[in-house]
Length: 402
Image 1: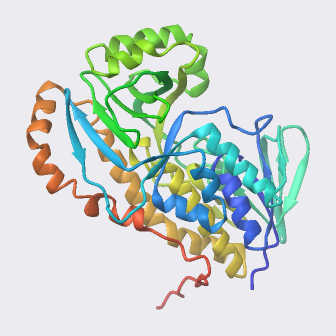
Image 2: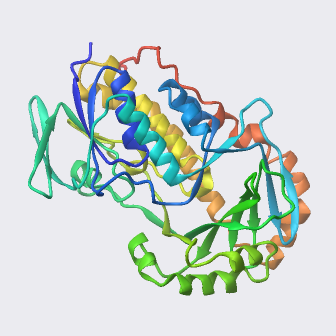
């Protein structure tokens, strides 16, 4: 029987509200503390939720609210040098659900609040004190909060990660900056199709909404690193000039760049990927979501993995006596899966800027690749069919034998 009754959640993005809602369902009171001054519903652009992520949200009763704000994408195409190739999909799985990140944050926040989870803002964590029966969080404004344990859902620049292990690795820069926009443009594309395009100089992706608008996202190669704050400090007009120059040779990428304005340009800054984190937990502190596993956006699984981990963490804390036992079981359930997906995404990142010869070779080999190495069962079957059995009891880690 679990002895955990209360939890502090640091971070109110995706993993934080889902972890809090899952803990609430597991009978554990959770309180979310967010460094920003309010819900983070104005951050980021579009993202995709895979069937496995939606299935995890369904366990908490949040799936339908997310589907209501999402666009289903049942088909995918790969565009290389002006030629498009239809990508095979898993026929027995629901489509990807593409959603605005800010709207997703809002939906998950509202669901957690409706479940009874409190949120407190302007609470930037500085340090923690651990004691035999709990942990006390200290915030920059001088206030504190105490509970049985603390969950770091504070993103890729996690403070909790460094509190668990001061030598923990930070995120690696992929060499690309992220941008996005919703524009008025009507390419010859079905509403339920996403296109991944290898342009002459840079990669981009796009999909069309039922009302004719297009969402597009650009991965701009950049030797210079720009954090989100640094990238947004640069005038949007500068980035527009760079994007228009970069994508000018591409169709329809050049048109997308020309139709993007300073008012609707979404600037994300550096795109990251997390290397393996040696220590997921310590005593009464544990990590979840991007704080511990952040695959690049190429994976299509970042948000879904964060949601899965939140639900699995709640199951472990529900069923095992102590936080340490629960955290060990949680890591055992999650590490191999998330690191395998992160490694796959890293391999995709290396192919995002093929030269002219490489693009010709890709086009020539694509029909064969679609039937072999791009077989959907091999590339995404295990990822998307993953389902969590909420009712199944979590087992303790087997005792080591001598």
